Amino acid sequence: MPIVNLSAYKFVSLEDLPALRERVLERCLALSLKGTVLLAPEGINLFLAGPREATDAFMAWLREDARFADLAPKESLSDDVPFGRMRVRLKKEIITMRRPTIRPEGGRAPSVAPATLRRWLEQGRDDDGREVVLLDTRNDYETEVGRFEHAVDYRIASFTAFPEAVAADRARFEGRTVVSYCTGGIRCEKAALHMQDMGVANVFQLEGGILKYFEETDGAYWRGGCFVFDERGAVDKELAPSAIGGDGADA
Image (cartoon, rainbow, N blue to C red; front, side):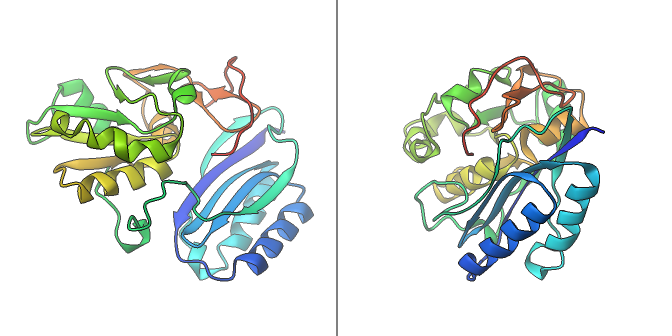
């Protein structure tokens, strides 16, 4: 039976973190799931793997909490569970940017659907005739595995370096449409909001990130694999494990 790999996040205010951690860990262990769940005052970010029956049961249980009722995970399949254990961790941010004024729960940046981005790349312009600039918000070791053709890549060692890097390059984006992208959507969501705060016009986030782009398109204009934070190391355009090894680090 194939293993279902879930990836999901949501920016939502959470105040009962220690108690929530215990409940989530208890449910995951009861269902024999493995992976990592990150909880922070700003929301939840999860990577879980197990048989279909177990992953469906966990999502049904989690959605009983009104705060997570609309949580929509991205899925991929593998032959084996790509995690060695189950962890639920409390953090200050579910994705560390160290810009407390950036609060996606208060209002998301505009997003572009994968199929729309695919069409923009095919036609060479967005629907208003502006040149499209793809902006990779991931870390350097991720972009080495794969990236969109001609994407801007700052080769940052961590996401905390993104604000300074993009500020130094602001002039590049004048008069263009910017589409920030990342693995599953979480980093490019914060990145797009930060760029809006900088006064950059026409900035979008790729809805669902690279994984959703693979799921909903043919993966055109992507080169290489997509680094994932588990023992698979990377996935290809069909969301199947690739031959590239990974270190299982946290997102």
